[in-house]
Length: 384
Image 1 (cartoon, one colour):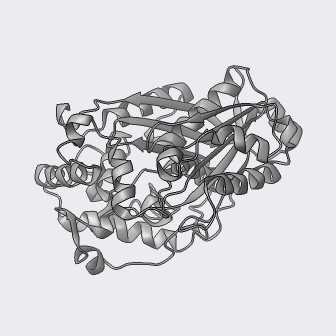
Image 2 (image 1 turned 135 degrees about the vertical axis):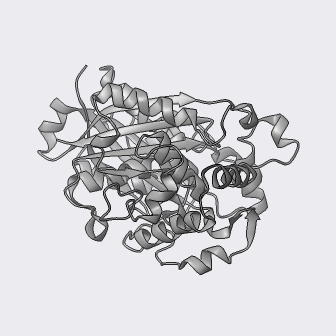
């Protein structure tokens, strides 16, 4: 099996966009082709990561439409839906297509168009991720986040302020991301005094509803060398699934999908948590940054909150997390988020992240979570 490389990447502006999902896909796809220096007719496989184009705007068949719009025919196309981890799942499918030898050039584009719907409408589409038994009782992902946050704070004697500091940190990082939806800092008092959504979590503990797209170009390392001397390798990708019904888990503060997907990726890449220089985690809610950082092995169980208090996860810390601003500041267009996480790690390892560059990063990790840990993709990357 040949090494899989990424030779091009792009990301659109995240936020409220005028265009529809196909416009966003075309924008990111075209930019990625240009960045990689690849002709559309060289694409063998074209994957589209998207959770709910049908539900949000009544648009299906987007994988075929974007192949037409990018002049990528007759490339094989498929739409990848794995709820809010659709982007990460797309990365896994694109990686597999190259690693298996089935494709010498695979384009992945992830996108979601959400802001044209009201908050209740968008929330209802997202809530469809939950188990039907939970959904009929009105249980939503914010409900799970609030309950889990309370359990975590009580179990590990963590101060409520520590969750607020995750939001403060990620907004601070997002100031330096020109693609982020929110490019402004917030102070701790603002976070702690914002309206309650799911106690103890408040408005600033949650990511926004977002439009946006991102794209990546995958190929074998031997092909990469024909295009460029500068590329990033993907030595490990792991995927795993946890119980669909959250209350069936032995410990809701442990995300088994994160534990298992990272174990697979670490083993595949012959790496461990101590080898990672920078990480992009799925902070749809602030509590998820603690849970993932622990279940990925960066910190001991119950000590993720101490890392934020000690400044370890900030740019300049020993384990920088979400230099992009994370979903919290950057935004969360469902199908694009996992792709944008890998875009950020690509930029970091290429040394092209500008003011948010964490230093001479040689390795990176992206963890994309579906639902409340129902399905997870962990991707490991390294500079060539």
